[in-house]
Amino acid sequence: VATIRNGVIVPASAVVWLHGDAWAYGGAAAGRFVRRSVKTDIPTSGGWFMAQEFKAGTPVVTEDAQQILAVALAAGEASKGKTRGGRR
Image (tube, rainbow, N blue to C red; front, side, top):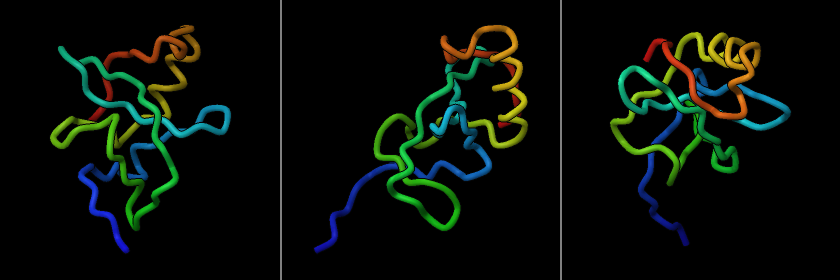
């Protein structure tokens, strides 16, 4: 029996890994992006299905996300999960 769920696909190109956990930067406000956890228990051909955390239409960083994470780590911001910039 299949269960139909509403959600979005977070593209593999948007996912970065930190200490074995998957993350993606999703749009917040005024050019800011928030690092959000990506559940990897429902893989798809192009990424991972997410029923929560991300909403349809929310911009996600699909290029340079690893660089944003590196800058956040260097600045000590990774624990806050917030940073500026990145391409959507």
